[in-house]
Length: 219
Length: 215
Image (cartoon, rainbow over all chains, first blue to last red; front, side, top):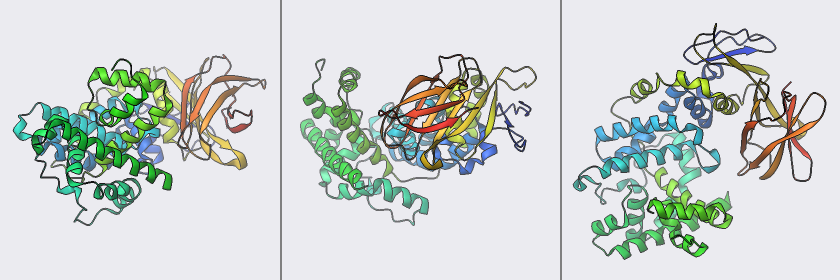
């Protein structure tokens, strides 16, 4: 019954059990990779499908590079980090659990952690300037419609909640949560005691958590 | 932090979510989370905030396309990995073929179809009440087949027994599938030697919630 032809690139043979119509190659090709969900593309990427790999990078390279350049502030470092993030995603694709979050978030966390590790190896003077956080403000460019959907559904609550957090707490939590600063580094940058830095981070996180829970209830 | 209590978790959950704990502190907290659902919820809420913060970071165009170097890194390895990744493919197939029905997939263990070992994959929709497709099931065609079952629609959150039905009409329990947030997956092997003709998901009251034919 298995009469299909193996494609050595995708290493999958697809044969039909009814009509004999399907004739070829990897699942991404058969099903039209651009029609697959993010989770499906990641799964295909994880098992080595070249078309899925192309598609995953196409969908997420701007997101991954955006996180990398925000943290590293260096185009060369950011490019290295972004490439390594995709390689790490491939290695650990099996561990992705859609119940814990989206592919976007998963890739963003991988990228953030890699970027932070990279920056830890750099001279401290190259760490991000906390005054350079203008991306916290609403975007001035006309956004991609697809991004609008994501932002509206996933992060609108956060932007609103951050508006209600005092400036000093907002800066502390963003430096810690996005840029990867320790409380000690936040204290040094903000010229405040370490205890105050910890307090600001925790107070902000608690306010955001309450807003997150409220947003989940409203959904 | 060896004796982690719920109070301790409440005090450091935000730091945990932000990755600010030491390895030892993190391990102790994880040990507590293993046995404390309420703290799992709390930490999950903080983790949701930490993840969402990254969503605010603006996207940016890389100066050079990332696909070529990424693919160059990956290309030699995937073909080697196929030989031991039947289960991984089954899991991939579940999500990949959500729009396809009635297709049998054959996984070839290498690029040479003439000499390759292979295991066929059967796939079918998990069908619930009223003929509603609520997920997918994929199984290998071998003596103790591997199963990968996913549901992503309509099935209420909770714990469900997964059963394999053989051709004689008897059912064999194969595992427990947890549905959370409307989604759940289970992968494992059927202990029985007979290839199942179907799998069913059974709720705690004993009612069949959905069924996936494999014959």
